[in-house]
Image (cartoon, rainbow, N blue to C red; front, top):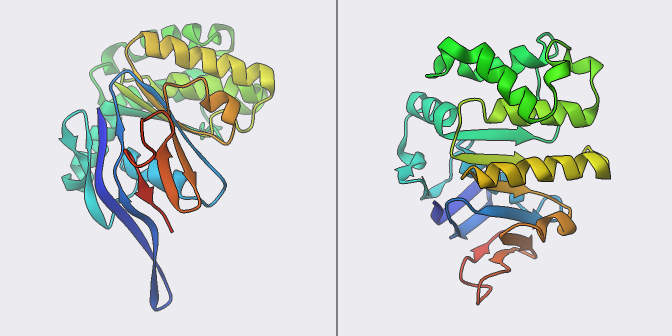
Length: 233
């Protein structure tokens, strides 16, 4: 389960402090597909960065599957991220100097899969329909293929939780559907998925929608908008 407890995030602007997130309390159950929606600048990507451990809150705590990640040192947090979560970015973040196969193998360098990393990477590329593109470089495949390779890389170490920041933002309708189908397969494998998206139609296909609007984040599928409420400035 993913849980935030009264988390706040502030940024300095000259001599002033501005709250980006204030008293955020949300819960996402294990093996649930959750969407975080809202307009640009609403705070949804800031929230995702906190959940991923990329950034730390000013106050409060974040627990993911029983681990309070806000109390971990930088070294322990890096090890935790490599083992416990996968991240998919809108702009793919594949290394252009490596083949798709090598990109997928990269996270396994410091994991229990290291000894069989090539075999596992080939299996993952097969699972996302890219076995015939394994030895190609990112610049020579389509955007949809890059995103599928990025998903394969994100699950290389078999993490229980997958975070995705606008994973279909740079894709056409057909490739967006392919990505959503891949996520459905991962849910069947027991993964928990948290996706930031502007696309409300895609969000409606998830189990839970956390919508950020007018300074508030509310769970649209709870009995009350305040159950998982958050004040955002």
